[in-house]
Image (cartoon, rainbow, N blue to C red):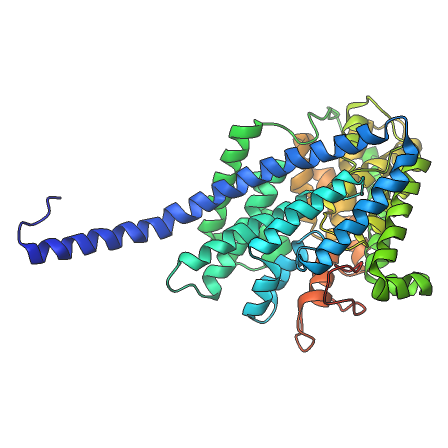
Length: 461
């Protein structure tokens, strides 16, 4: 279109073109660009966390006693930084996103849980955890990072309201999980089932667009990979496979419920002296946590250090079996690590605990292929902790290319989730309610004991 020659009309045309350009930028350019940033951060964070874990392993190779110095020191540093400067970045980050979506609207809550300060803390302090051998994962933090990055774009919109803020948070969280696992479908289902739980989100084009662009960035930088590699699936699954499914669901459901209970009701089993240190002497508390994680790692010859990704993948590939007690020791290490209050996630460690449980099921049903049982138990344990069976099933299916086990994995996820729900509430929802909801609010999850609301150094963080 040719601009008019009349100066007055020319200025009007210029304003119109500028307005259209701004609308296009806000509608497409800004969310697309933010989604690309989420994908880039997810890939760089994955590489950095893996490098930090390898560095820790290199430090203690042949010198396991060094763990008793490195792990407590970095745990104390991480707790100090989180309490002093990065409150709001603690834990996996998924409870923070749930609180932002469902708690009564409060701008102070958004400032506390999101923003550049929280993004920096999530990245830097969580890497200290990997560098110290803590049993934490990166996927939950990537969800928090994705939501925080997308939420920052709301500042550019002239009339940003609760609806736009919600769309951005959901889109960023879905994009973060998608890029972390290279599982785009799981990212969308996670946002709907775990975070939003409403019909409106199913038509959220911003969320799907963010997943696509974050996924494209991940594909460009990391390639089209399967998180746990190609899984060997049995060609014929008969009626007898029902028994492994039921046993897997039972084990995963009970241990998942125990995990949720251990984190939500820590004050019923933690020694009184340790509880006093936690509230009054956080550095002493952090040192005890670090020493415990180090001791578990030394006792298991390094099996419990790190996220558990390598252990689960090697077991799935049949290259390195795990000890029969791995599921229990990794479970204990994850509980202790998470209670430090540093940034760190649960997804990868939970999947590795499920892989350890699969060895127990295989001991009872040795005719069943171990890789298939690993897929079942990873699905079941993750479903038991989150009580989001669709998310757990789709994540593991996409990570392992386990399409041949669709029905058994769905059944395991559903049963394990129901068994866990009989004994404990969904972990992320309960944590969000306890830590971030106003006391007078009535959230969806069942209440847990009151935890520290400031500093983020508690086990409920």
